[in-house]
Image (cartoon, rainbow, N blue to C red):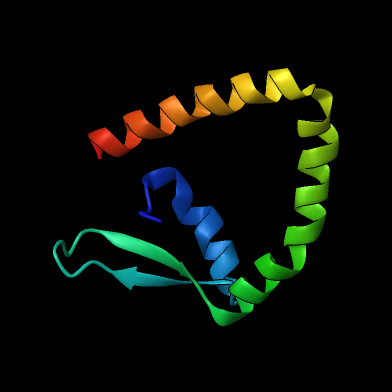
Length: 86
């Protein structure tokens, strides 16, 4: 993740917990990236099942199969657009 101005403080808090580390950019001395540490990866992995369950319960389960197909098709167009502009 590239650190924009508004992310400096939250990343510093995550860094204090050893969840992320700052990584300098090879191509730009002004740029700083945040990368997950092993501890951070383990925390994300541990939270993943509960997160997926919440997304399913509060979002996906609200759609019937036809609505899910429309959502999938719509999001596929968004992903295609983003890939073509990157």
